[in-house]
Length: 315
Image 1 (cartoon, rainbow, N blue to C red):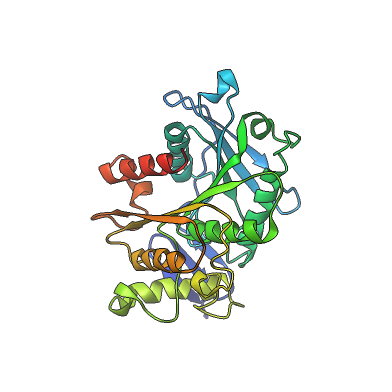
Image 2: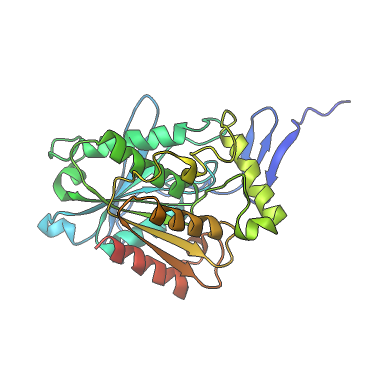
């Protein structure tokens, strides 16, 4: 009797399996935790729906210091990672990390839950993220639907950040800010943590790490099958004619010594400096660490140092 199990297309052990019929098994990132008030940090969080039709939503965090005095604070719009395929804004991994970041940096955070591939292929994740940014900007005159944004946010002091796929999104959102100029807020800076970028021409460790390059490069046509390839500006931003048009004043690129994506992050920094953009770009390199180590071991010395660096970047 013939097997009815669909043929496997792509398997990333312990992360996900995608089958040729389009179905997916997500092996991690499926757990969600509710919003809360953290008894230790005092950070409060709540969930909001940004678009009822598409289901775009977000989790908002406010630090304890905002509660008694309604002080206007910087705003961080955060885009989670996971290769555009796994994780959500509501997973314990991101909830715990952003709760800590809100407390350390004394910022309001909007963590965007965009739709994921392969059910929703790129550029849907980017379009959802842009819709979320415009929803945020609609609060700049204190007339938006979310009271926390109306009451607590200084819209002249806005930041974007994300890790891996979320860092990819953060870069492209910063370019769209410059090109489309949403009214009501000033984007000060963008922090890219272990960004997911690629390219046809191998650089750095990509020349020798055939397995790592193959794993990274196979994801791209799965999440964006109509892409032009690995030099598509959406995954290789240096190829974008608008690369130098970041709508912010400064960029922080965080890389990790043992991360396969490290050289792409450093290459991004070097090319941005040469592009004529005009802002300031810095790198934080975490010695001895691997990809998104800070999410898996948030109390280690290097993770604490990164948390403090991100907080300083926004203050």
